[in-house]
Amino acid sequence: MEHLEKNIKEELAGLTIIDKLWYLARKFEGKIVFSTSFGWEDQVITHLIFANNIPIKVFTLETGRLFPETYYVWNRTLEVYQQPIHAYYPQTDLVQNMVNTKGPNSFYESVENRKECCYIRKIEPLKRALNGNEIWITGIRAEQSPNREDMKDVEWDEGNKLLKFHPIFEWTLDEVKQYIKENNIVYNTLHDKGFPSIGCAPCTRAVQPGEDFRAGRWWWEDQSKKECGLHQAS
Image 1 (cartoon, rainbow, N blue to C red):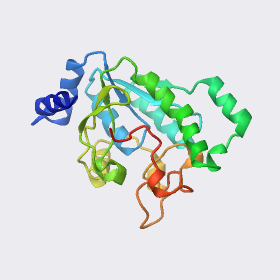
Image 2 (cartoon, rainbow, N blue to C red):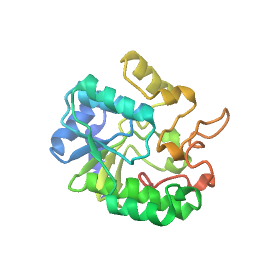
Image 3 (tube, rainbow, N blue to C red):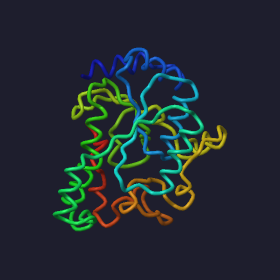
Image 4 (tube, rainbow, N blue to C red):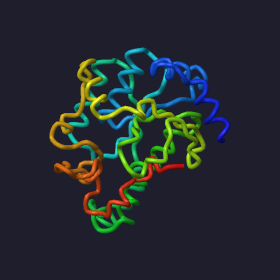
C-alpha cells in the first residue's frame, strides 16, 4: 500500500491542517474516524473537527477504568461542541471471565496479563470501531515515544487494513499547549499534575522530573514493553 500512502501524502502537501482534514473527509466520506482518549493532543484534533463541522466520526474507548478527570473532560467536550462522541465498550463476557478467573488487578502480575487486559478493554473494541472504515485519524506526535520514531504522518496500518493520518505529528508539546490556551480548549487537569500521558487509572501515574514521557504508563514494566498495541508501528 506504499503507493496509496505516497498519493495521499502528495495530495495533502501544502494544505493547512483544517484543509487536510476536510480533504480526507470528502475523499473517504463516511469511512473516516478519529479516536480520542481526551488527552492534550486529542482535544486539539477534536476542536479542529467539531469547531469546523468536519464530517469525521469521533469515538473513544470506554475501558471502564478511566480517571474521573477524564470523564469530566468527555462531558465538558460534549457540552461545548454539542456533537456526539461515540463510546466503544469491551465485551462484557470477556471482562467478566478475566476478572472472575484472575481478579480485578491481574495486569500488575505479569506482562501477559497486562496485555490481555489491554486487548479486552482496548484492542478488541478498537477493531470494532475501525471496522468498515478506510482512514483513522489519531493524535500521535513524533516526539511522544521512541517506539514511534519510525512512524510517518501518513501510513498504512497493516493490522487494521486502513490508512492512518496523524495531523499534528510534527507538533511539539509546547505548540500543543499553546494552541489549547489560545483556543480555550477544555483539557484534562491531570496534565498539570505531571501526567503527560493519561490512560486507565490503575495503569497511569505522574511522571517525575527527568523521566521519560511514557514512564508513567505501566511503570512496573520494562521500558521497552510499554506499548499496549493500539499504535504499534506497521
